[in-house]
Image (tube, rainbow, N blue to C red; front, side, top):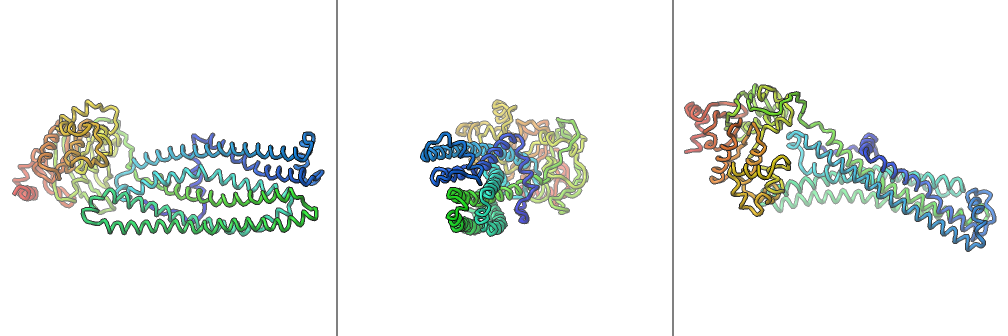
Length: 605
């Protein structure tokens, strides 16, 4: 899974459009949030203007405002109701308080709705991404670490939520506030406006440099987070190996190095902020100083009023606050776009097995044929070479051979976990690729040596939450395969939590649960992949009985290292280096004095 993100444009418009498309069902609330953001931006200038009017009209006692129509309008509507300057100040103060309350209420609802939309979008996006990942072929998971998927599904999608809660609408609101404040300032006194805006070019250049620096820094941060997730996931899962080979100190050193790189990446991003924010404050203070230096002189001359000067000081803070906030918003938006790019890269990955089967068959009998099959996991590094065999419904065949001979690859193809490059596989005469995946997976059950169990109850690990499978059916299946007694000895029996990967159970017990799982799903084709190669004798006997019960009336493929478990098979196929070199039943193969007999004698000497 690639960790690279584009570092060219600050914003990728294509990704931004894809993000906004996710709003979909929530467009009304998103639009309402946008309306409140715009409304708040449009009224931001009123409070400073009211304060300036109050100072001029009721403290400086300016009789009229010929050059300021807004102040003259306020004077005209308040004069009939105001008998003294004190009353006038009370009226203005009350108006400012009312306006603050209105703005606060709107800000509350805007923040709530923005976060509601953000969480709803991430809920949908995370579900879609998980569903998409579920459709990937196993080859994709072979090449990409589990920790990377965890990062995409959790932290990266949380970063996308920030785009809606504190990103794009906030940026629009801040830009609109800047525009409104500048327009009001120009209309009120263009000379004072030019004085205030003098430092702005420097700020714009600094902001642009900051934008580029911060994007690079945040990409590095996200990549380091991903590395930590992958490392921790792999080493917690493989803790037994770490401790068995006494690798604790070495792995700790590796983790500390990765952790240090993560810290350094964060420090680089903090360094950019530590320069930019003080610069904004410095320029803001510079604007105030310039305004006071020029404005006081203009006030003494009578070219401007004290109220206007105070209003402009308030406008300076309204001007620079959005600029500083824009840097924060930009940080959020930038991070969200980086996260989105990584998430959409997974969405754009075409790594799933084609499911374009046209056959309407839902039930399979189990007649299987492999004809001229060639298969490689990578390019033309062939794992299976010219595989040919046929089996009839209800037959049991077994594959034997050394590790790496290609036995497991055969069942991977039959279950359509991987796609073969050459040849044809048919089930009941129908090409495997014409059968819907659902039909194949429903009719082919695989019991692996390394059984995977979820951190859940015994019952749920067997049914996999299929509502059509009842508790009574599970108990009957457990009795049939000989696992009921050991389950009843567990605390809580069928409700016993087996913990992560079934760590509370032995290898044999986990395999018995896998047998029950296969039994209750009633497959027509059963595959037992090396199911008895690493268990004790007692468990092997139980599994042998379970195998006999499970294979009754079913087409069965058994892969085992212990030749004692497959002597009753209808046919045994001996594999070496990806080819079938011998086949026949147990007695036929012994009489050939070939590779099978050599394996048999090695095990039973």
